[in-house]
Image: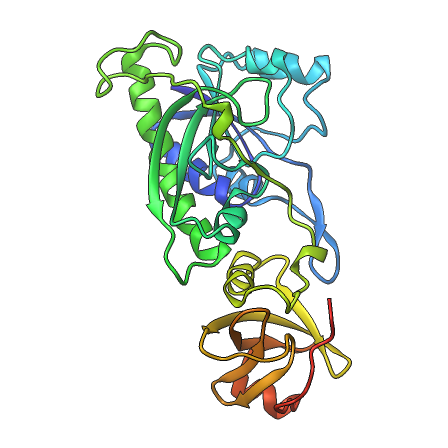
Length: 321
């Protein structure tokens, strides 16, 4: 099939790499280059870097609302547009340009976790599974018909990064499966038939929908009055961004890995134990053992190394949120 691909981060690049092996990618849409790194050098997105390696046509409009951009997309005469974490709103005029419309690779089992941060919100909520939904895009926010979905288990130790990596791979295989079925059925909008041979659009249950709000740095500041289990989920959900943080003895530290100590209690924020295994801190219910930490200007370190550079002792108190 002749495809236009729209995406920006590593999650999307995994899908593009898979599509290149089976389909004709007529052009790639990706966000404009952004400043990144300590030097804030203008840096192309992972999708752009992959597209450059394969000599693909690249379009980087700041918006898709302009008539000129829409004309360029229409002139490509694509069968379908595949969208994955693109970051720009697709106007109705663009949604209607490809022959079979636009298919979105979404990192949740819709209608659960519509929105910008489905991976992190699933971990925060304690969900036991996530997955990929291939959706026929409409003008709403992740509200289109479900064409195909594949689930994966959220393991107890999964961080946003590890779950992202699993879903990126699952997204790549899922879009290939969806496009094979699309070719058989002739259109993503055809009436339901044999589910093994064609895509069957399913309306989302809007009453079951929930919203995955965009992440903010402020929400990653730990409130020790919360249940230790919820804080442990936050540590995993905000790894690698925005990373949970808290202040002790006047120093703000980042917490990359932590474990539950449900049998220990104390005043929220008070250090109960500080040894080579970790810094155990009392929470509103239970306690949390901080195992991998990072002080300003240093790399993340296991607790044993961290304590050599920044001594913390039982009785020390983390600052209130």
